[in-house]
Length: 286
Image 1 (tube, rainbow, N blue to C red):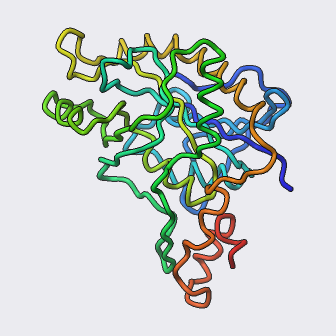
Image 2: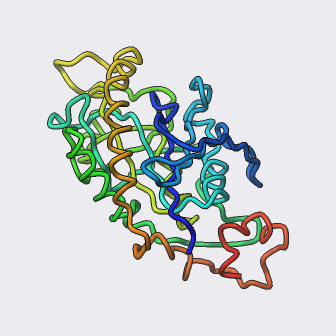
């Protein structure tokens, strides 16, 4: 059985993980190009961790320019079984205040420019995505958030927009009628690709603002976002430290076998290059 290994993808404000032991920096190249940055691999609470800053160190990469496939593929190459994504979001409900933590369990995809699958080039796969986050990991993150003192909401819908611009006021009001809880720019296609790679995925989302729908609050500004993020980052790190200790040794969730019945293309029809490129993801099924 492979050693338990957890991936952490840090969003805006989270560019490093303090407290790692036995640290090494690993640079990878994937069939889909280079990840956002080098991976920092070490141990946290005795658990092996692979940390990747989603936007690169120094926050160099816009949401629309992120190489999501390379980021998730790189995690798979390293042997990651669980991914905790940390994200800054806007609150779409009065009850979710700036600084609150949300553990979403649903997504709505409003992106327009992103490649959202590993499949193509001669192979077709259709994974189930009705429940897009790992229920085991989500529950662990919720409990961890409560124990470190966060005001945390379990479940909720994350609306992912293309960006990099924030919403217009008309868009924000429209999205509110859909009943969404938070709005962000990065968790899709990250969650979709993690499911295709059979990696458990869940998100710690920190509300930094009320988008621009709120009549009595100021419209979202990057300055205010960064101020709230500075406060939230400490809580996120504490929650992650708490959560990694709780992860089970064996995965019995749907994530672990997501591809078992998802590959449609007959083995003999899959091009050899595609087989090679996707070896770390589909190899056990070929």
